[in-house]
Image 1 (cartoon, one colour):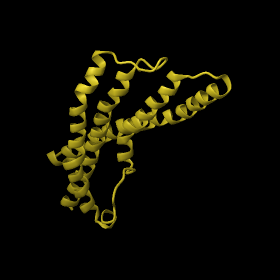
Image 2: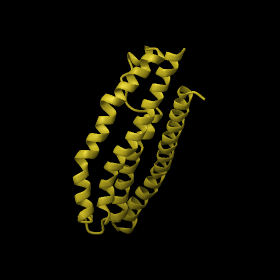
Image 3: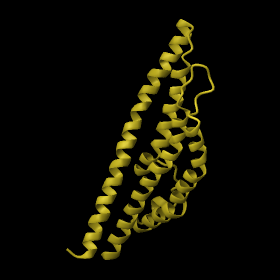
Image 4: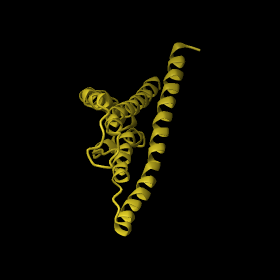
Length: 178
């Protein structure tokens, strides 16, 4: 086996591993949408018919909503569900699209993930240090976990961006070897 095919195999395995993480994360958090619907119905029914406010359950819907969007971002990227102005992109060759994807990951997406992680780190750690809880009576005592989703967002989107970069590089290398 030559070094070129060994490198391709390693890239392929890394890409497959990153895709599996992204896929598992996205599919797992997608179930929270069903739980959110049920929880919201319970909150409304309890308030309307029992006159009871379920603040903790109501806050949990916000937590789940945040988890779906923040942890599902990498899944959306993997499945090309992100917002993209593709007036020019869709008309480009596969090689040109690979260049756009690779440069987009390197110049915009990966630095964004690093920036978000860096600027939110002290915010999240401060919340963990004081074991921040909800300010609402009956609210959830896990605000630090909610804020931790920001760091996990950066991580999961960064992993998906790495997979997209590898995918683009594979296309570029394929075309180069032809």
